[in-house]
Image (cartoon, rainbow, N blue to C red):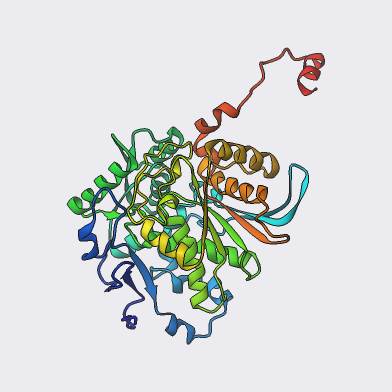
Length: 416
């Protein structure tokens, strides 16, 4: 039973004990369940946002009404004007009916979130976090990142006139670090892993009172990410796909995708949740490998898909709940399969995505090869970041010819 009253737009609810907390104060984790947390397991006490769907339903809104108002009724902010001026979301949705000149028996769609302002899906979360911070009077926002979340927060804070502090593992890709620096954020390289940077950022929030954007720590990030589900529903003419392939690291993006469709379910716009497929790299499979384990086991991550390279998936518990509740599917793919998917995607669509994004496409290709996709079924691949974010990963695929003397004969040798 929700305790929402008319003075509160939403509540926080612990995914473990179910206790609800009012939204007057800024809160990150359940104070009770988080006492059990340690550095060897995914955190307990993760909070999710709860809206008063009963009250919203009384208004008899059509989906288009929510769309016209930028889904404000389902966002944890008060005014759309609080959002950054940059265009976040409403990203392209493409359908392709052939791969390598062969007609596909199923329908294939790409949701290209590399077209967000900082070229990453993470802008959806950063926009909501930035807007909330603006409304609540926080001047500084901190996050830990392997690159994309950091460059996203840095860029949107630059647009808002906010101060961003980004903590990154020292081996984060140069392209992403370049973005962070160009946006004039304070960058703090940390010796160790993403998890070390994550822990330091939380301590810094406690010490200095900074607002923390960390995924699976700040419950608002999922609220930003869920908007992709609203858009997919809209772009498919208010229908749902049969499957959505999602790259998975921390488990926050896939939880956001689930949360968006669950909101649509609660509002009675849909009558079921689409099958959502979690795709991880074999070299960083700590989320899907542990879904059926009683004791969480960590395997050190090593993959070219740095954006989803995570030893301790911070949103493991919520992602697990969603996957099990809605009969989600999951698989792992090799780094070679990820690189091959990058090539196939680029040459067939003109979309150059980073390895973490093409992990999802590698998952779809695996399903296709195993004949798991029904004829005429609608399948969406979520592309979460631009290939320009991580050029090093594809260097071994490049074969640049030697320069030639500018003659037609030499040109013929190359083009033949």
